[in-house]
Length: 374
Image 1 (cartoon, one colour):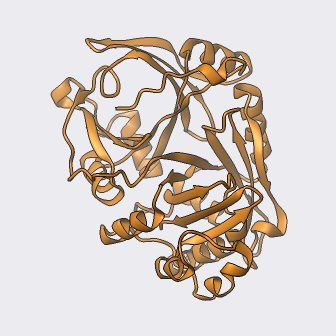
Image 2: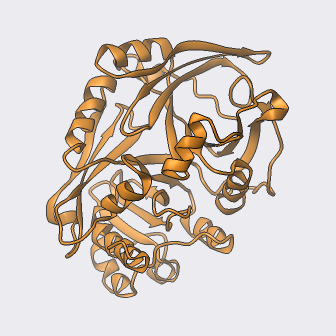
């Protein structure tokens, strides 16, 4: 059960956050999606909402692993906004929910600086206490719920009942936290949304990637990373760049039907064990050519994982002035080529794998070519 209540290091922040509260997915079948994330990603189901709890419109499962929380929600009837969303966009992220010390103050600051409110502050109550929640709109049909749960002891929210796991619980969580959440927006819109996070949430820039650093012979993109002052919440924003062929961002925008969350990066303490377990459970990862590893040690230096093991599992490595990181990317995890995941293990580095972008994009392009979308 996750409870983020320490606001001690956010007192001077105009928009203090405690971390990511949840990533909320709209899916076609919540029971099956919950089982998938339980068996393949090692999450544990902790709560449920549906007809059995008095919710006649949708079914939701709450999944946790370390400090990471997913909520998968499916419509029960075809004539609802949720059903129409799934029909139009497929399975995808509808809410990047943020834990805040004061949902009323956060909403007032955000809407006072130009954010569109989609849920005014309201109290949700049951025998476990009170949650205060509000929400603002961001790119596409994505929202940020602002959640204050310091007076609540239940498993997730009022209306949810505790329930047992859907798969055997691992002794040690494979995933420890949500590292960052990446959004794709239309050409020319990246700077608008970066400015939105500056103005509405007081976020600042961490990184900027433009030009040849993240281009191949066929496709390109531009990316900027915004984050809160504590770096607990990090949102890279991507837009396509003009290139010879359709970029991965263009493909996403086409199949998702507009801007949205492209991938979720999940932190792990043991990427080797995590990738092995995920592969055994059926998760497919992007492949990296062996030639990538022939010179890896020359520019990354020594890591705690031998290069031969990185080569075997197709894990990427990158180093900056602060340390190094290890990362790998899944293929899209639903039928449409939209949402995928990154597994990342950090050792000092707070970067995003700049040295791997070309290898990653070429791997994505190989998958695009198989789908006929390059």
